Length: 219
Image (cartoon, rainbow, N blue to C red; front, side, top):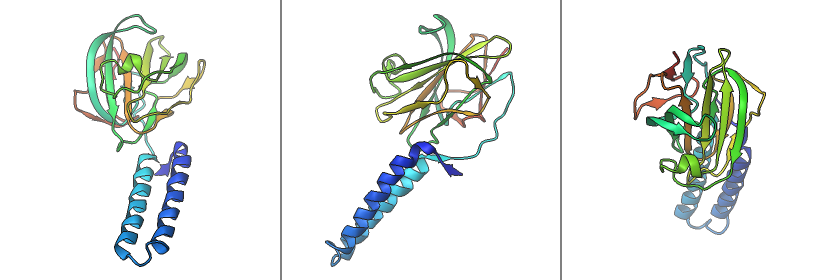
């Protein structure tokens, strides 16, 4: 288990806050043990919360060219046939995974392939389960082409709390199934758009592990 690089600034800030709270407990509130203990306790809780949020556990991906792996830890909230308007402009099978603040927020490539399309969209910060969040919120769109020519699209979507999306890929990059491609801070969702004949292997409400859970099998 390591701490993700995206957490460095946040952890440094929490450490500074902890130092201030400890200093207060030994100066202004030195004669009030209860208040001092509360301040130190608050600092400790903040540090534990921020460390667990930016944890980056080691993953052994279930590499298989026929599998589409979960791009995020979280819960399956959408499985439906829908019109994908940005790139394919036709009907696709959509699987959406919601990440709560307690989930690991490292995003992993669901397939291996070459990045054919990448775009960052500035936008709103509606709650991640809002019907319009996938089209109106801040988001990134990635399309990767597999060796057999099949293209898969996935989209990182910001939520009400998630105000920073990081995507480490660009057009022309080569992705390896299960490897990290991005990170979303403080809870959001990832949508995956598949061919209509993809065999979905998850159900609404299922918990997923990035790079491990098979969400669909390609025909």
